[in-house]
Image (tube, rainbow, N blue to C red):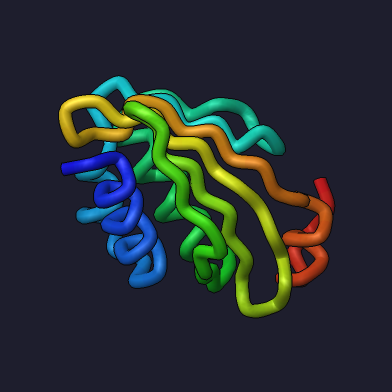
Length: 117
């Protein structure tokens, strides 16, 4: 599969809060670094991160642009409330090995009435 196809599977699983499908897209030793937070290492830790996040807030990823360059897929997204961000996914052998995301954490916390840490 191409990185763009893997990313589309990721978006579909994310929007369904499908933890199994979502976590299966990551390599065993993948790193997910949402720059507003500390990096998360390993598929099981990434799965736990998503489990916690889906339990905390309802999230929807609406792709605005998807780009592909070699083993990278790049996503510009928004959510129904207008929050925007972007993500970079490095994919090898049909698995995400590295992900970096940029989004406004303060706006996210305020939007979902979550405590500001």
